[in-house]
Picture 1 (tube, rainbow, N blue to C red):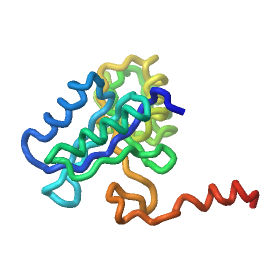
Picture 2: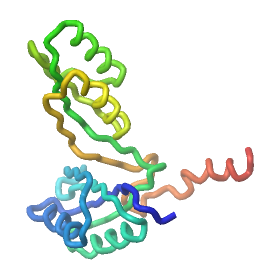
Picture 3: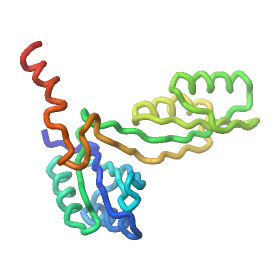
Length: 187
């Protein structure tokens, strides 16, 4: 089905000045809004990984990947399949709380979501939450009733599960096919 959905692109690029700008210009030049963007170096300090989330049709995402591959600074591009990907983002949330009972409620919510308390003052608590957008949206909704003073997101980072990597040559063939065969054969 070719519908507009949020797609995650993983891009390996040279770790040098101006590369991020060239990649971002490609998206804006084609009229796409980047929903999430995270960049960091890989195990090779000369290479950075850019994780980009964009809402597109499948054929549009493929076209964007082909355009990215034409950039000299790009080593590899891959659209991550949601079933084979681990996606996470870090969210820092500063919540208003001046009363002890409110503080305890916030701490209980933090425990349920495995959030870390990273700062406490007389009138606020700052939490760090790591997870996918359903988790971070859920805790944000619960904490909003206390009053969110500030919130910041890192943007989504993603890797493929198992031995799947952005480098097609290291991919273990058939790793995720077992479950599909079991379902087809009724085992």
